[in-house]
Length: 195
View: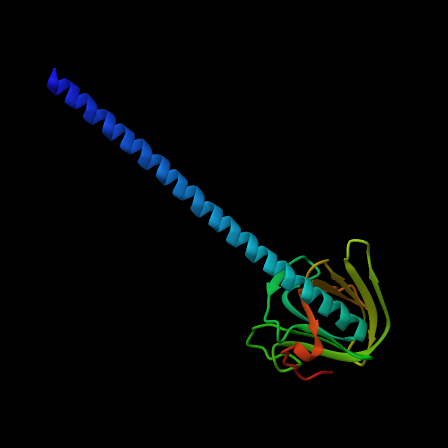
């Protein structure tokens, strides 16, 4: 009987120890999860503040006509996409001058010497609207020797991510560039030969 009582006491002590260990492990997991959630929330808040600052800078650059959309993706007329380097694929506006450049990583140097096309022209008729949600819509015309096109910019509220559609006036070979709008003085672009 003494052995039975001792065995029963041992089972009860080990069961209570296991239950305590399980509840302690659950508490530690809950604490770690709360810490991770707090860190994520802090990072999201910092990211939102940074995105909003970039958004305000982009709006000011658009108003000043001193901006560059550095594209990281090009979407062709047929829906095919290509990921590209931002410093050689861009739409630039500097006052009344605009440049559209594409450059792909190919062995063919292209007319601009870096694998694509660079066209310069005079910009005119710039119109900019900001809707109630803060989305920005901007359009202007570019007229030059190598280009005659309409340019449409759509920038989402709260960040400087934008989409630029270049619509040539003499054909339907639309080109869309997705990237970030930044002030001209902060850009790091490499311009090829233009025509």
